[in-house]
Amino acid sequence: MNKTRVYLFTGFLESGKSSFIQDTLLEQGFGEDEKTLIIACEEGEVAFDIPALEKENASVEFIENEEDLNYETLLHLHQKYQPTQVMIEYNGMWDNTKFVDEICIDQWQVVQILTTISAETFDLYYNNMRGQFVYHVTGSDLVIVNRCEENTKKYPIRGSIKSLNPMCQIVYENKNRQIEDLTVNDLPYNLNDDYIEVNDMDYGIFCMHIMENPQIYENKTIKIKGKVIGRDKLIENGFVLGRQAMVCCSDDMQLLGLVCISKYAKDLIKDEWLVVDGTISLEYDESIQSNIPILHVDHLEGAKPLENEYVTFD
Image (tube, rainbow, N blue to C red; front, top):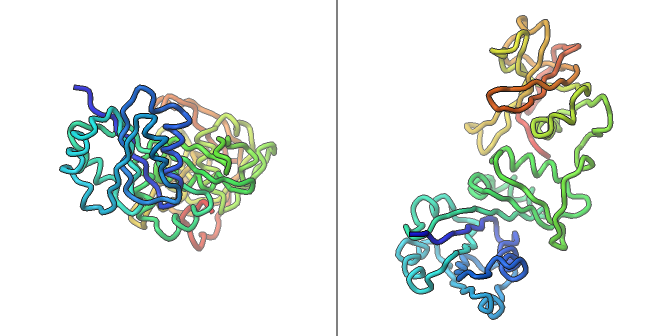
């Protein structure tokens, strides 16, 4: 038996979930030849256009209380509407992992989790409601960052999201709901320069970008500060220079590091802080079947530890 496809839309209140669902059905034809059930778990700033949705064979049910979103309720709705697909506008304060793991009925299958984030309120929620933010992002397949303006700093937002969920796809929309691509102009340094000095506050953005786009950095000279994580077990005279990114709390860290080669590698001490500069080359890594960047160090020197050693994407 084919299960009913479920698309779970997460994000904080007024992040654009309702608009995204309606646009998907009414303007992109996603409801064609489908019988769609929309379950709205909060009242957003944009009301659903129920008459227009009904013309696309879509029905809307509202569930305001978390305790009412349960197995029995979903089973009743399934029997009532017999939908071929379900779109759930999930309440931004509820744990969406609970829905996937405990609530979703056997007849349904969550095939995609989509998260909407307003660029206008990103800093507010990320800095002050990190726990709920983590719920939204960690399980997402697609993150839509909307309401971007000309001066929106996309790479810091991208870095924060990718530190929580490296595998998710991220797209950016301007206020006219048009897709915007990331460009090198969004980076905090000039990629046209052959010599790039990475500021301490830009460390995370640099690491994310070079790992995703190593070919852009080939033969460039990089100056960067970090601490010695340890020796590389496979590369002669290799060591890892890195810093920790705080994903959610001090017990939940992700290492952002760069493999370096230096004749002084054997003399380095774990957790020692260094400033290094050298040239990037690309080498094929069999384990990931892709090229990785290697920094061939021309100069290194000891450095004073940072007051806050954790990576941020401000």
